[in-house]
Length: 124
Image 1: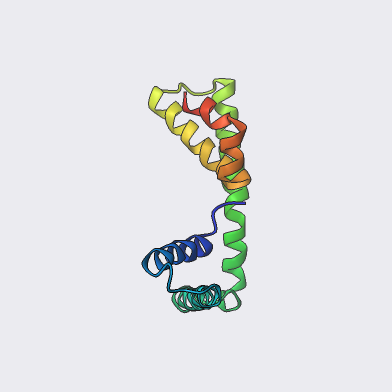
Image 2: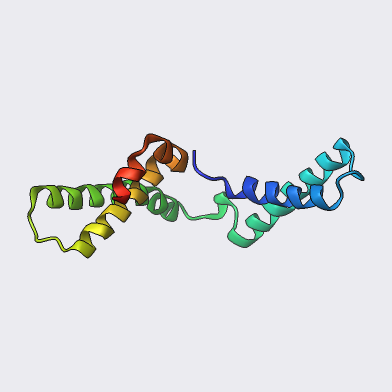
């Protein structure tokens, strides 16, 4: 649901190509350029970051645990905040709101959080 960086980069490159050569490019040529961009960019990412099959299993499990562990940690901090356990300064409350927004973006994506209106409530 979130932003796909590969598609975003390819769309941006295609926008530049369309503006530089608008009338000179047929639909077939435009499709060919886009296909070349996709292949080149994906090959660059695989070469730079490595393929998923080359990553050790332990690292894959560790990477897959980040979101749930972070969410549970923030849930616990929210529990402490709402039960009033420690004293909370204004700076800490602002930071807690920002971290809660990050967790919401993780789970639901930018579009869902923005359209729900919860972002406006948290920004107050």
